[in-house]
Image 1 (cartoon, rainbow, N blue to C red):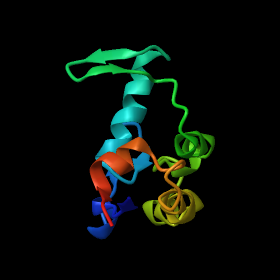
Image 2 (image 1 turned 90 degrees about the vertical axis):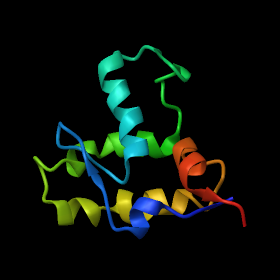
Image 3 (image 1 turned 45 degrees about the vertical axis):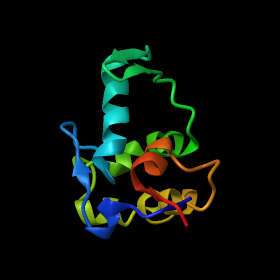
Image 4 (image 1 turned 120 degrees about the vertical axis):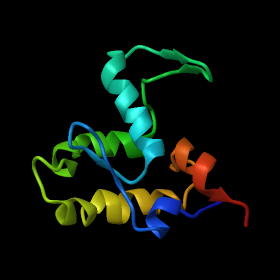
Length: 110
């Protein structure tokens, strides 16, 4: 499956209430739920969301999250950060590394 990020195509991003910048609303949702769940699972109308994130791309985001925050860097610096320009886009080439949200919302059959 090929990933065509609709937010990237439209040159858009999302800034969360706490200054974190994400490439789209699909990724911010997972990270925001994690903030308020204190590491526990959240039960929603769509089912249970396990917040012990095992996806490598989120782990890498969290390692550099201070650099991806508008209270620490300007938006140009954030959007040109390696996580946005290399880590995330390169993950789309490997189905084992692609975020579930990317596959679900931006995956297209080749």
